[in-house]
Image (cartoon, rainbow, N blue to C red):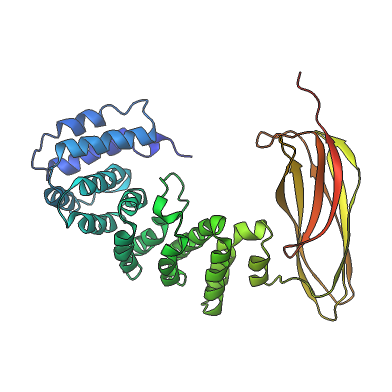
Amino acid sequence: MPTADELISPAAATGLVRCLEAVAPRRELPALRRAAASLAGVGLRARNDLLREALLTDLPASYADFDKTVRSAMDDPEFTGWMIWPVTDAVATRALASDDPRAFDDALALLADLTPRLTAEFALRRLLNADLDRALADIQGWTAHPDAHVRRLASEGTRPRLPWAVRVKPLAGRPEATVPILDALYRDPSDYVRRSVANHLNDVSHTGPELAVRVATAWAAAPDANTAKVVRHALRTLVKQGHPGALALLGFPPPAALTVAGPVLGATALSVGDELPFEVTLTNDSAAPTRLAVDYVVHYRKANGGTAPKVFKLTTVTLAPGETVVLARRRSFKPITTRTFHAGEHALEVQVNGVPRGRAAFELHVPPKA
């Protein structure tokens, strides 16, 4: 993770002053100069906020004049990099506070023009939250933009779970609203754009798994040379969870004739710190080769006495007709910072192509805290 000084650095802030002092109507820029000199010991987000507020103080109050000033600065090739983050944030803030009916759409256009210098995805969220449908109507047009950075912004800026960014609350109940953007971009010539599209659909899959599978299925039906990779990346969370629809789309449908013996546990009781050996035997009873994605699920006991499943990948294998394979693994129950173990009955379950095929219980003992 880069430090604040590696991103919105004092040098970037003073560079922002230099770029704007040549074009700002009030060239002294006192608030911006003070903010640029006050970044020591300040975190990244706070640095952005300091510079954004200074820009709003020093630059024109009307959105049209603010927009004109920023566009004038864009003539300078040095107006680029992390100094742009507070600029995009200020653009959104000024537009949303304006009573100029053109400000909203003009701000979207300015963010699109700024994003090749540094992504405007964070500022875009402000406009999406203010008027989702109006913003999406303009953003849809970006999917045909000649610049890959702008096309990526259409996908990345509208992601439901964009890292570091505020959530777009109106999207929570309308995950399908951004699908037309993804449909327009999944075959984009730029890998940079396609990775964003896959990450976006993966975000959708967290709350709308069936929607994500439907969208990916439509893409798979009209592919180009890169579509299979995009679909695999887009469905990675569902595959990890053993979602049958996602697995079937990737070539792992429920097997027609399969015998599953197990899981056979190496112990029925263990303590925190131990490992649990287990094995499962699979036999392909069909007359055709069978592709299998084999997972195992640990049903961890919770503090309230219920259980919470966690899926782990075991292997993928293709069995010839009549072939048998024995898979053996060990699951560690060593203490980790990301999980609290609770004493009592747990279970280990085998899952083949997303379908549960066998389960065995065991007791976990947790020593009392000292």
